[in-house]
Amino acid sequence: MSDLRQKALQKIAKCLELGQSANVHEAAQAIRMAERLMHKHGLEQADIDFIRMGITRAKQLLPAQPGQNILRIIRGINARFGVEAVLVDHKGLKRLEFVGDADKAVFAGFAFDILYREMHQQIGSFRTGLSGNGLSQHEQNRRVASFTAGWLEGALEKLPNLAGEHSDSLDDYLDQQFANLDRKTFKEQLKKSMAQLTPDFESGLKKGKRVSVNRPVSGKSTPRQLS
Image 1 (cartoon, rainbow, N blue to C red):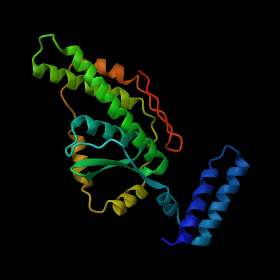
Image 2: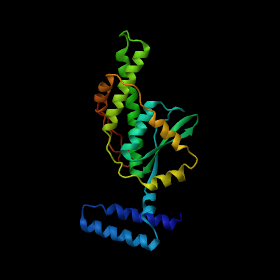
Image 3: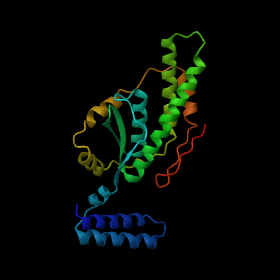
Image 4: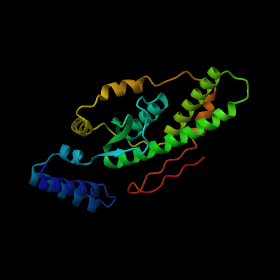
């Protein structure tokens, strides 16, 4: 893409953003300006959608074979933010990247790091509470799995729903940025990520609903967690 076309797309994207203003007069002017620029440079709406796409990398590196709990977090964030997660090989581990509308991708990466960290803290606390009660290791693991499933259900439910309609531009962007990645296999892994539940699911659900993830400001602010 030429520098001239790139600059034109950025100007148009800015106009379309102003076109959502609560000021009707300002919004109408911005939309007319966007239409004139699009006509001048021979651009279509698909071009604008594409320029808005971005990639945000989660800070947390993941195991080479991510477990079911990690997949649940990823699946939930994909659905709530309207992004798609991509797992990229990184020095024997996996690096998680969220792809979609740039602002949503930043928020998705931000949310993943918070939920991942808080999930492990909650699992540790719950497992400690089960120690010394005579349960077999198998039963402890079963109860921890159910508690974790409930916690994740509650935490993901608290995330804002920013998905909107699916964008073809997202698929195009993914194909361009990750041409050799097997996205189909990853999606199949997500579908298999459910486990058997015990009553501890409800306990986890209540705790999960106490988590709060705040939108980052310019990707720099520190999110708060409510416990």
